[in-house]
Image (cartoon, rainbow, N blue to C red; front, side):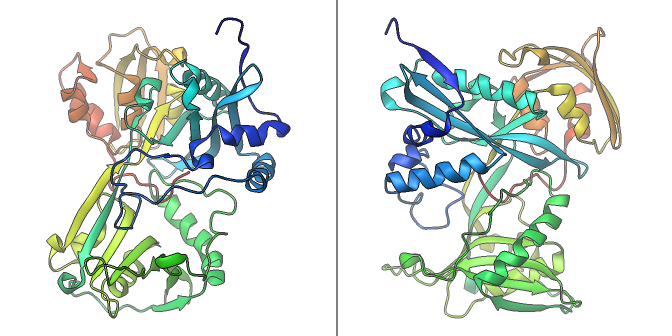
Length: 434
């Protein structure tokens, strides 16, 4: 191995096809750990692997990504050969208080099997963190393909998602006022037109929700997808005729009695409770079905509280969703607001990749205004960088993190004060991956 020349850098345009060949998904290899995926609505644990991409497909991906200013690839080359690859995508994420923060979404990561455990992934992560900071992105996020990998780089779970099932014969909604709006089944072309507007309004109020990538809904189609059948699209309009909710669902064919008659909801968003209830009212009582399955849903789905029998909604899978990693602690903390005013001094000592985060900080928040500056005062508590990253969106328990040893209090009441300042309701959620 001595004498090898190793480079960690952005791939050139003519190196992009080699870059993709280092990624598991492009080769038809596993790219998710073998556990039931909460983002997958089918009865199997996760979707079947893709067919390895051919030269034409690789060139199409390269052409699209090269044009995308938000896509930032990084690769490891050993003696000129690409042996590792990753990328960040620039997003905006909604943070507590309804503001947005710039975020580097880490995606498509892999090191070929013959070159693992040589530190290449850490080097790529370091390069991506530094580039994100140069772009003014104070945090990074990802969906972890394997739960044991990314904690060593400072990432920690920040949101959850669930897959749930509902038996139609148990699904009845509590009485409510009549819906002044209307429901309509539409085609894919109409769905493509209305999804961006609905998502934008939802994103403005949902902590953890992401700005969509260009072409986010271009793949919607009326064509059948094998035995999964075609996607169907249900929209809700308010009394003024404006679309304020939409759902994508399928009625897949099954060769077994166990899964026959299943309706799979792949996406559902509504800007208000009336539209939300109306959409679910149709989907949980669809003709000639017996089971509704919804994947990638919030852990605190409001539908449960609209049912006459809340137990009818059974969570069948649950997993973490977004993992967060603060790259610039003071900037990130001042970009969100805090539901309970207060002040705290805290110490971070464990950030080796972004050492500017280490030290003692004084956070003072009064509603939408917050400051976070270095201080010489004694800290109220010490916490790990991953713990602070988990707390950032407000969906994780401060007391649980403290109980597990990630937070240590030095003054009375510091844990409770941290919890009151950071917690958000409802829990953060994002509706799609990257």
